[in-house]
Image (cartoon, rainbow, N blue to C red; front, top):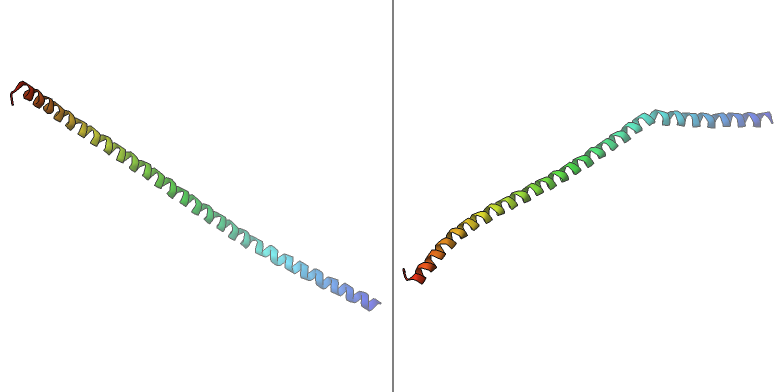
Length: 103
């Protein structure tokens, strides 16, 4: 019976040592795993921020381009309005001249 008891104690000690060794190994790996996880999170955050910045820049450029197009359209409208007014004045003079028989 003592032999069985000693074998059980030896087996329990062996299992305890295996558990202890596994725990030590896991504890030794935790800093590296934590650092790798932190690096991955940092990289993801950086990539997300970069993507968001690019999107915001593209939207800003789009709005800027839209504003430039609108300004150009307004300038062209003013130019055409000025030309139309000049032609209108000449057209009125032409019609009045025709009506009064000057032409």
